[in-house]
Image (cartoon, rainbow, N blue to C red):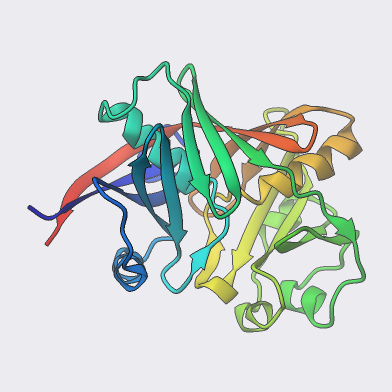
Length: 263
């Protein structure tokens, strides 16, 4: 029998919205990095997740089509969704993941998955050469988190209308660039988009890990600890966030789109 693979749309309750991730839950550790990278390239999604049980913890790794990454929110939501849906973990049980970013957890909150992730607050920096020109905007504020640049712009409409120069963005010394503004709808606190051509993802539909920086950024400005962000990509997705010291709670729905088997 081949390896089973499940595709899940995360940070949405509607198929073909949110961010799709492929999930492979394996019965034994996989030491073949090249195979995992090849599967991720074949799936050609923002991330493919590979997990296996080690005692009462699941080892979890994430791959874009071209590289392994340190942290991924939507593929972790997708993995937790599969583990509960397939009865591999009881729905009332917290899932613990051992990852390149340390121990992460997932819990059920009604119809939502809640992740406990490290906060990565951005520090202010001068915009690097070419950043504003590549985005076609004038930044109100620019910062850098552990992995990415964060650019605040004047309006949600500016965020929606971005047409970046991916070639320039790919040459910046970061994983990606998040662009954000206050929301123009009462349903949300802020909006964002995320571009990561350097790791093979020109635009990520919904980026959980980016909200580890967006949550403290907007929490300070809005004087809130509980917020809802909307990622204004073509697919769109909703991420609930909660600030908890040096951690961020990320909340989102998930829906299975299809199941298959690798030959």
